[in-house]
Image: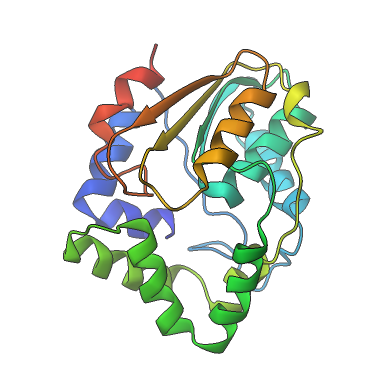
Amino acid sequence: PGQEAIWASPWGRAFFQALARHRRLITFDVRGLGASQRDADRSRPEQMSADIAAVADHLRLDRFELFSEGPVVCTMAVMYADAYPGRVSKLVLFSPSVASSASVVAAAETARASYPLFLRALATLYFPSGPPEAQRWFSTAARTSFNAKNLAAALSWTYDLAPILPRLTSPVLILHRKRSQVADPAQVRAVASLIPGARLVTLDGDAGAPYWDHEQFIDIMYD
């Protein structure tokens, strides 16, 4: 979901406020999502990485910490950190993947064929054990934040970060809930093994969204 939808939820607002503790927090919607231009081309992750550069340049950010969640957004964050190593003081990846999976790419066809059904399935994927209000919120927020075309385009990405990950020089923290289905645990561990000095922290629970039950890891991010 877009940042406005996340902020409108009590758990999302609490997460943003926790991130902003003793820091200046900057959030933005990537192209095709939320308040960003909906018809922008988002067929390649490199384009999304360039959006981070555009936001950083516009705000004149010389060096900053970068937080990303989910395989798609983590991919663009990794590509940015690789292209601009001197600007990322710390990289936090929540449930990343080394490479795109055939099952995710295939899901793009489901999104195109039956968008409401796909969003309900996606809500269950992110909140497998509920609660129901979080599943309902996620499905509704996703529907208002992006359309089927843009979502399918992102799901259709094919990427392989294996050549890039060993080049990262920023401190990297990797977070993943042990029963989350958003990213394959083997893929998450592979990301950690390929990044020199990366720290992997496995969290309790199965929620795929970082703003849910964020209290268990927020202090780790400030270490």
